Length: 396
Image (cartoon, rainbow, N blue to C red; front, top):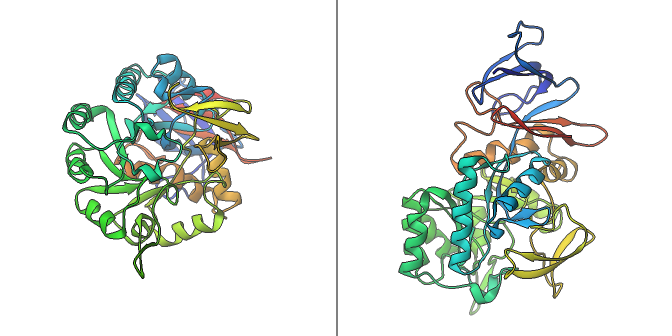
């Protein structure tokens, strides 16, 4: 069946500008034509009214743990369906379900459930593959992950991950931890995005990891080394390495809490145009009332959400976030001063480029997947409709 989005202002192509009013024709899950309004269309086509709305490429979240009371580490179809439905309401059309640092059987359960849910399209949102965050961390940079589950690589555990490479999109690890460099190289050869994070690595250690295949850094500024002192000397850490090395892409949790506006501007100014994307890092308390929640499964860390902000119980740091992708796009416009097209690009084409899927996702172009959001700009930026492969999965 043909689906037509009629009369929307289209953020067209990789740049998202200009914004012509157009009709978008969709067939077999892909965009097949973008035409001026009023052109003849098949009589039996399903029509979606886009008048007064902006058609933007669907948002791609490379780092998300949960929402609406569920976490991907729950490893159930119900959890995946709940999280998908919730984040679809924020414009997400594809994501990397993200694990926490827990025992290996818990991580494997999430990997296996993700493979099943991807095949059956449970939750509506496309699963790009799992982002394994941990367990190979620096103990001093564990953040809200449970310290007792932080560990060093073993051949047996490494083999479990490498054998499941088709469902693993990305792994976050600390390159200075003994054994990580060798595993990182093997993971990268399997097509897994090797991402540095939760790390005390020096600039030189980070650079060595890049030489071995590391291409990304997790939640820039958070849980990473910066300007270390060695005797009387000061040297760069992972933060400085990220800003200096053009081979590294990175992500920002642009909830206006984890990282202040000036530091985000510094990252955007320093890094190349396609090297910084927006991520939610959302946890199960997103969309829920204030209260106590677990990060990860029921053996994960207990955290407190108060006034919509998730913190560890000691109140010494944030514990993931409670935002959706539309919140980040809104913040990029209002706080960072980006125009809508540039903000959307940070949430769509740039993460698609980092993930290696920009040939099929991330922009509204003929031949690409019909992953589209319709946005209302007034009275504030809101998602009115979310579509994945031409199928509406959310309508406000």
